[in-house]
Image (cartoon, rainbow, N blue to C red):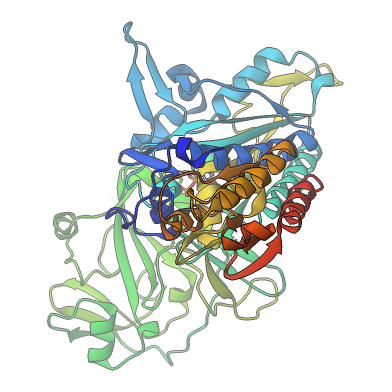
Length: 570
Ligand code: ATP
Ligand code: MG
């Protein structure tokens, strides 16, 4: 490819809206172009990388025995009503009507469609097990689209759905996908962890997430050397029995203008562990207020609260200050005693014999409050696991890391096959629902995650197998025939061997041109300078940009050819 024909649109400056390396570099390298918030167009270089990632995913999915199809993004309301998700999915679902007033959505995921498809197409149990997948564009009207391709409103996903006769079959399909995903992320050179996950809006009874490790990740992971690893939303937080001594009579204490845990605990000179936070939510599914109690040093795990209430993410919100007043309390001074609403009490709170809680009265807290004696509620785990909590398996302190969720797999069982009537006839001539699994990979988010793990100050450092091109050859001066001819010769030879190679024929300064290739992240950078006359070139790896070597043209060609050849054996 000639650089002059490549629509290179690199930017020198950091676009204002971009906050994380992948977003900055995707824009600066001219790989994507922003259309509106959370909606991007892929430019030639970006599309090449996307296609390569898709092909690796495709190869491994095909190897696993799965079949590729392609569905429309348009989905009729009826199937979503049948599964119960038309309501449940909330405002993230992009809905529209056609000219006949029929309602549709743009698919954020395809459980309903695949289940209906299999119901219609599979007549005999002989077709089972079956795993079908697609690589397709999804739509989610995210509350806060951000970080470029990490959380967009339109994104590319590989989604697969497995159909089995029984749970044993589902286990096998799930394991097969677990292995396939591991292979995919290894081939993509991602440093990742597989963690236990909550099933969220998709549903089902078991799930793992594949997390690319990165500080910019939006997921918190806790893990232990024994092998336990979980998303903090899912993690079983091992309780900490914090001792507070013998219970005494409840007393009211003046805590003027002290609302936060830090303010009250330092004012009373007690540990935040002796305090109890009472957070009041409104649950729109059950149309009720709920108080969630966790220890002062803990955070509420809203996912566990939602699961306990059988509510949804969209239906749970914090109560407003006015609502708190209407409930007979005051924001910053909420507590369980006298509050006439459902209480979810984290188990650690029940161990405190002398806790400090809000008095539901401006400027007052209550001391020596004791669960069971002074108030009651529904006891469970409602806090987030965190660093140094004890591992639920081996009881050693947990470690914590941040990750980007690049994939998730679920055992759905009959959550969709039952309501959508996706059944088969078993040996006893009975119609039984198929056992389903579903498996997603965020293709565009994976691309961004690779950049998060592979970049430096100069730009992106693509692994060779996903790089938009393998190699670039730049003559220092277009006026020097030796340089131009040598560059052309190497270019033609590599092209003939199917290396994806660029000849930089642009009339610009060498430094300017090389900056582009370093920003874009081409793995092999060959420069033809004054030694061209002797058939010698300057050879650089993008990953070691400061180490250049003077090598013969043949050595340069052989090194690139061998590396590209090796890709075939991956
Ligand atoms: P998240 O928790 O990050 O919102 P999710 O759990 O809702 O994601 P899934 O329904 O599991 O997402 O979708 C499968 C995969 O699609 C995710 O693992 C992720 O890689 C990708 N994905 C989901 N939402 C987005 C988005 N808004 N932008 C880009 N990729 C996304
Ligand atoms: Mg997910």
